[in-house]
Image 1 (spheres, rainbow, N blue to C red):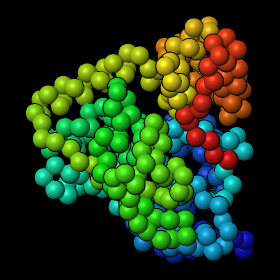
Image 2 (spheres, helix red, strand yellow; image 1 turned 90 degrees about the horizontal axis):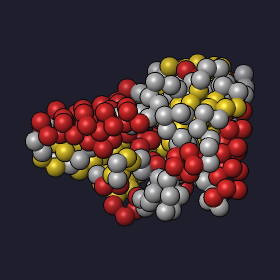
Image 3 (cartoon, rainbow, N blue to C red; image 1 turned 180 degrees about the vertical axis):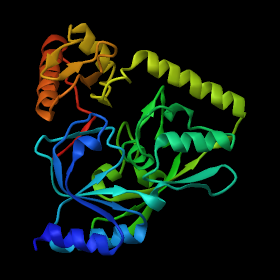
Length: 302
């Protein structure tokens, strides 16, 4: 029995769902990705700590999966183990009159709905972002001039060797699409957001308005990983790409969206190689024609 098989058996003994050779195209919004060597779901913090400790001791590489909405997985799949957060990691609860504690595995949509149902305002901007709460806190996701840094007051985490801790306030080191977690390698397990009392009708109306804007401008009908590039200082990536005449540009099954040039969409059967090839075409063209170097926002895994 090799190290991955041993970890899989150990995970089963802890009550985890375990799969070998799990196709990752089932778990990413791009619908792209080969098989993960080992795929398992942890349902609570203690189990996750034990799995991290065992993985660290045995030298098994671990990739943590959120909602797969900002992820491009290699056609060859992911080596080592993929940890998905389920069970208690998807629970959401009030932890004060206007504060909410959300498990990292819960979707942003469920967090927004929870806040709306309690007449709490502050999460409306995130309605329609297809990510998990943990992933959003990890990368400081944002939209419509607002971001997670405005509402997140603390995050709890598990370290790669099985320890645990919490970061608060300035220790989160939030910036544009980044946080302390992008550097420290810890796994976010829960997120606390501080919101405000609001009018339920106004909250619902704002969420409807933003979703309508998103639907009208973004290719939600096709598989994608959201915005491919970070916003360059003083510019918008989508505008630059469109100005370079790249809307509709294809490499294999991947194409620059006709609806929003900041998105690459899977027209059917696109591979990771197709997407990577198209990203290079875009970056090289935009740099040559505008002098602006685009930086990828989506994460890769292999």
